[in-house]
Image (cartoon, rainbow, N blue to C red; front, side):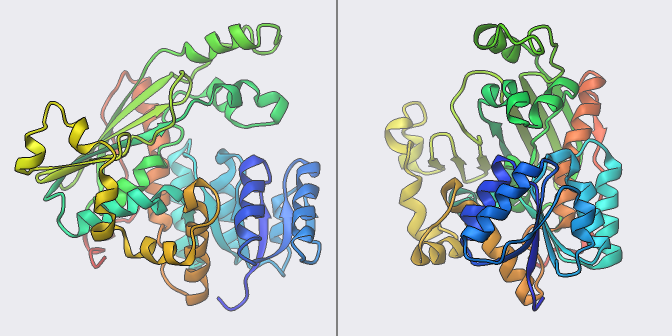
Length: 401
């Protein structure tokens, strides 16, 4: 793509952050901004002007933005339940798309997303920033070089205390509140499914076949509201559908298992719980530790913390991913330990080179579908649910990478 002129849709907290600290900071041209709340759209336009660019067109309806012929690329950072709808419309309007993460509440959304891409051929990237984390990419490089031996099992998830963000949803116009009131599922599966899928070569010689999900009772938000917002007339009598902890087990075609956990409404520290288990070694993100099937490490199988905790840095010289080695030389920038900057850098590089996207539409559909499939499984008491093949059989042949 020779000309990149961005239409930016969604200017809540995450969208504004990315616009200011990543997209504009990388010098990309933004010609239009859109949010359903006009004040947010105007604030986004102000950020563009403050970055030294011409003030962009302002819209409150994404369809009007898509009719702007100057826009060639659409970045979507809205509430997650609208991502697919906007992305599909954008591709059919002849725009390249970068779409933020979140789950899908219907399988139809996922199928239509793939269909729009295949019928239009417009570039599409799913903005799963954890695929660009330093440790996630180091683990990928380890796996590619046989460090773990044969990878057998991976786990991860979204472990983040969001009680204040959810409870303050009406005041802050945040979409999580309505979703936690009405759905019981893994609503944010792509942290850490994305990096795991890359390691297990999902859609590239392997695929996810079935899942089963269970949800705990929903007590965390009610307890928080009782203590912190007892006088909130809207919330005090509300019953939340979303279980406090959702656990999903996935079986892959090549025999591996994946465990995903959503844990966002109880007191806890932040973690993505990223773990890789192989026949020769393991990596665990929570302790930033590598455990190797060696005489030295096996001697510490009970008191392993003395030997292994925080030892992953010892493997950086040999196993840091080449992308990160170059990134460190250039200078790590932006939020989330540099992941956001790197994912957009790779998106714009692929656009300009007309190259395949590092996280494509098949990744997006496969990972987002876990949300609706987990909801189906939970509703049926943990029943096993089939996971569709969004590649239509091409996963058998897509093994070059």
